[in-house]
Length: 312
Image 1 (cartoon, one colour):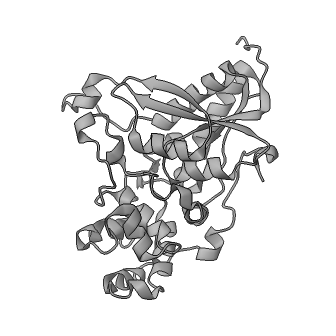
Image 2 (cartoon, helix red, strand yellow):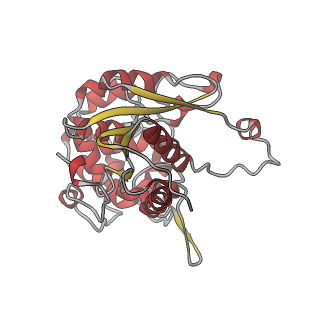
């Protein structure tokens, strides 16, 4: 296979940016000596307002791309096989093309440790709906890129050895982003008239992000950010049970942390006086026995391919 000659600057990096908690933390924690630019992928139907507002807070420049989806996916036709689109692999490869084209030597992804965790087991097969965010996928993509452009281009996730509990800790201190960031999928609908301008308060991601931030932010501050209280909402009870792994062996088919992370965060939340008026949270916390402690989740988790010059 012919290798494409490139000249890339390792001190210049591209950061794929989705406007949610993970990519905000990656951008904010890269060292100052790196020249970082955000990479934003928008649909043909127009830019996402929450993403644009969050990117504006960062103050960094932006490289843009537009993607077009097959109309059958958007219409959701029953006869069309509509599985989970491996969007992270697509974003990674598009960002790699943009990085090489602009002389940048790094693509800084924001996939944390639990992105490699399976959602369920089917016989001997582990099923991970966000497999293209996993460490295995990262290694394969990096190897494929190295065949074509060599080792000058580094593609790795800055958060690979970090838990969602750690990410939430860092994000809780980035107060300038609290009024604009968005991780709710309904804010990023491909169909314009279905996009929400706030958090829906109903989906697994709204519930999960609330749960991760609750140990760090006051209940009042959470209400100001989300305009909902999914942890208090009794209609979210079954969803919360699945998130923390209470009596189930299935992780939601959503981009959320593993059950251990959720269970540990819940255990910390029920210790807080301001949540004592929601006794079912304490009842649920007593049903689960996570393998790791809160403090252990603040430490590094597993391997990482991050180069030293990306670290502070």
